[in-house]
Length: 223
Image 1 (cartoon, rainbow, N blue to C red):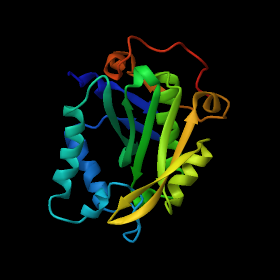
Image 2 (image 1 turned 180 degrees about the horizontal axis):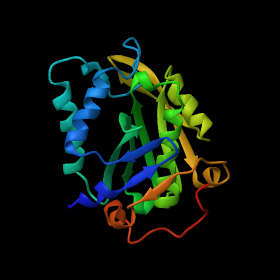
Image 3 (image 1 turned 120 degrees about the vertical axis):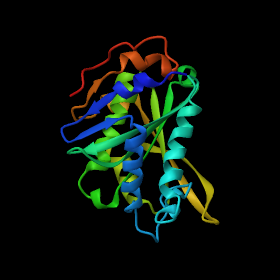
Image 4 (image 1 turned 180 degrees about the vertical axis):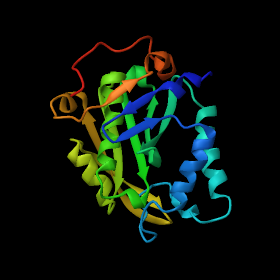
């Protein structure tokens, strides 16, 4: 599948730009991650990929993971991983995934942010940008996320943006059982919220890649 149109997709807020990274930019993002994503004693991810930080081959494994997602992209099962830039400097990745999206109209979000960029509101801003893409750009009816018990920063971002609890399950992380909270945000709750300005460009050419026949009906302008 030809994914080149995704290189033209842009989400812009007052402080951030989210875009599909080139392979060279994936290397840059890998180096940012290698500088630290969270405290080593914590693990906010079900798949503990950050355990490889500082190890030989981490950069290559990071890039290969992202390239693998591109090779496996299908209209019925896709994972959009957008790099996040603040003042032209890469600070993290914001993802949005869809499996059977055109049938269920539900997407899932996930992200990471460089530890040195924590505490500035970037996590909330980049998630808000991807939610605008999901709801306003793609016509999603709901977006889900999950947060491991103890991952307070991620939970606070979700709660601030209006997600509500949607169940929980036990998962194994680093060989130990941990509680994984499922969170869900509906289109109606998002529309009713005060939202930041998010400018979306280059989406029209990408619409078929998300399993859609055309852009969704307009609903409300971005604030």
